[in-house]
Length: 299
Image 1: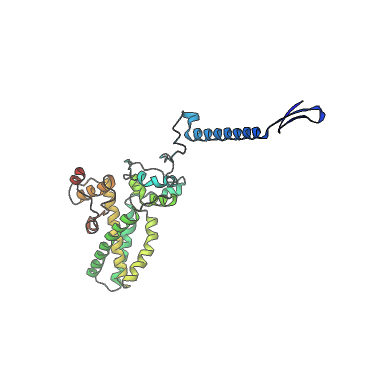
Image 2: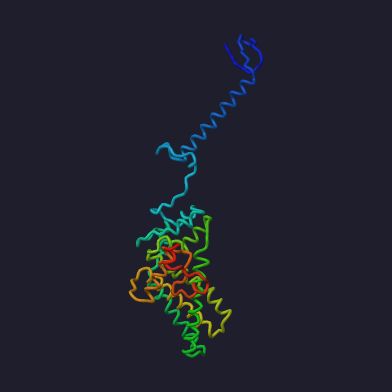
């Protein structure tokens, strides 16, 4: 019987076996070559598997890892975070369709994301009236309540601008920050004509009312707090109804026609300018007015 083993010589082993001893250096080279072949085979499989070449043909070697793609036919909320750094570019490429996407696989969560526009005035205008009545019952005249409420509306316009500019348009790139941004405002920029996700859900508004009430109470007297809060809440109702109308109404005269053009300009032309919804006042104050169409064309 013939046996090959690493050594520097040849001899007859036990049982009459003829043992041919191959130099150990040669065996080491063979083992190294074999390991290299295995590594190359593994690399080939990884590259071609990740590129899908086993099923779809070859692709460039540089495409070892495929970029994540959002499937619009599946619930979106837990997909968009995977876009990471590409999320901001993706979310600001609007899809103009009146049919909104599905957000969640769970029907209850999906229901909570959909709100008819008329739910906002129906739910919150009675609360506004209760606030005004409470201030009157606490000793203020109707004229005083009206003045306080107007100041509350004015304060709301600043809150509207601040939230829209610094929170709704915050830059995100991680999974959870992208997911939160999409739920908060990104979905509106991606699907600007989705009528059921245009106004703020009443459940979320109710939750936010408590900290805002306490904040107002820190700066106002007990008797003026209801009127001031009611004015701010009325400003919010006006904001949400105006926002819906700017997307789905067809105004023929100014100022509504100007506001619609101004807001759609924010959606489809210059998305980092024009943050005001009910007016352009704070855009003027803080220098975020969008350039005119003529200026953009020249540039």
